[in-house]
Image (cartoon, rainbow, N blue to C red):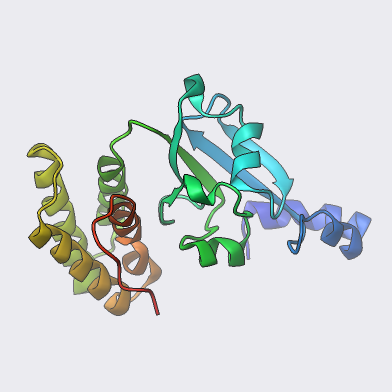
Length: 209
């Protein structure tokens, strides 16, 4: 509620009115939204677009995938959001639509990943961030993130191929952390990893409750 973006929106809504603001969205979406676009794009930066702009259109606005490479996947809402493949390029960037697609709007930080990138390594890097940021108060988050990161790091050092046993272990850790961690950090920390497993065809994840 007290974000810089919220404060930035207030003056223009006050001066132009709520109806003007509602008209700025695309489709069923309302208002404008700032997106920080990073990763493999020609023109990374912060873009203000109508809420409901598609992932494809936002990437095009940022100059497309760097070097004309083929797109592999995106994280639409920052580090805690699940990776989405190219089949979701036309998904509107809004809270409900991204949730239906299996991810979330989050902070509006769109990360673009080009084909040829080791997405398991990218997800492991995200997990490393959450492991380091964990306050350590609850066991599921503190221990689960550490065990999962160690397992993934060992896998990457060995060539990046996950055994069935390790895939099952990662999914088990994700379920436990999501259902029993005290705060949102532990609840979403393993989501990006599992979304990469899904894209790699490593079995179906248990649907979130």
